[in-house]
Image (cartoon, rainbow, N blue to C red; front, side, top):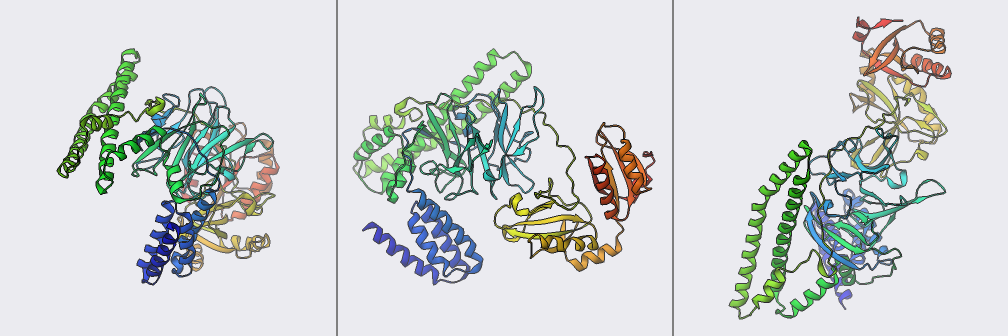
Length: 625
């Protein structure tokens, strides 16, 4: 009966919305699809989205199509739901919730840091987890497009770590991947993503290490109740093998999260959950003792509209009281640590942290007083209506220990570790940006376009990130975000229209039938006629840059290759702390490319073409060889 009523409601409301006009109609329709999905009514969301796709404007079509995909995913996942035993749940601030996890104390390092240098205010990632004895670190960081990806670095020796690398394409989406956690045995990698197969927001995933391929397998969505239509992240199994812990904003405001503690289940039994109410109850992840207390408490109160308000007020009192208790306990730990600390710098840091904590206490106490005042007002309203509440029961409910619940689990707050100090191995400047066709295509190491006029061959645009296999041997291939949020891929860096035109048919011959020439000036796209006019007014100069193998001198083979192709000057200069040789200037970039090819055949691996200013050739500090 309820299902029929829901279906009739959806059809009635959808008819009203779809016959309304313009932008309001589309926005309202999308809001309804989103609300149905977030209410765990995936079947209703699918029905509504399919119906809406027949009527919405083209500008909204892709949004409804995505909404339909998320709802279909959620509906599919209701067939395979886990049934974990819930130990505890508690709400924390998004700023430091991870400090309450059963993880190594002092291992969370504040962002930004050497690994996550682009993190900033408003970023979900507030810290990077780096255990003291880690031999490898998995972490999330932003790329040049601002998208968070998962990276790995490994210890080379006591002082040096390897060049950070993306994990693999299976664990990389067009959106964000955050909070990776590697299990102690190194065989499972948990993380959250809002770009892989999911039902909306950040879902939780696990990837298993494949001993045969020596790589991570395709990630699997953990499904209900771990993942939800909201944001779910930072899934961790405790080292003692007793608990699984994760965070979600499914039951709180966006600036906070609820941390759920579950008994670890090594072999979860999955089964279908067929009703919306049952799915909601499963995803609420209410500890058994809490469910029993709420049932007893609800039985003592009349079932009217004030009951929900009363319960919410009770929850606020309890949460603020527990927050103050946790805060005070944390201050006591800091004071104890200060007594035992001998390092002067660490003592100063502890004193500052204690002072900050003490300054924050009055504001929290003010929140508690306000919550108590609201609770007392509701109690007075009950009394005015002839409803008597036992004060002892009221006090017992307000003081009930939710941090431990029946299992005696306690959320203990860890401390932030010292500022992260790692020496990362620097990538060698060996990437060749000259256009070429290889057996396997290559993405450019840096998608930033050089200054001045640049031509490229645009290959295709896609709603997802491309793989190296799709490049069909072209190198280098650059990536940018185009209109509508699509991923746009272009090959090569050409300084003249003649150069780019000479390669266009080769690119089309590789299967890119729709390839076309595009132009940029100072990194901004301009029309081809304007580019050619600018090119006619501009004289570009180039040089070939060579980093000697021994860091000091050019080899005899390199000098022979240079003198056999050109009589240009060889100039020695500095690139940071490294010695570099420049051959030039050339007005023809193709002549530079020929020289680069000859040098590589002569065994020179670190060589590239660069654009130079005419003034650079007049610098008296450079010496000819």
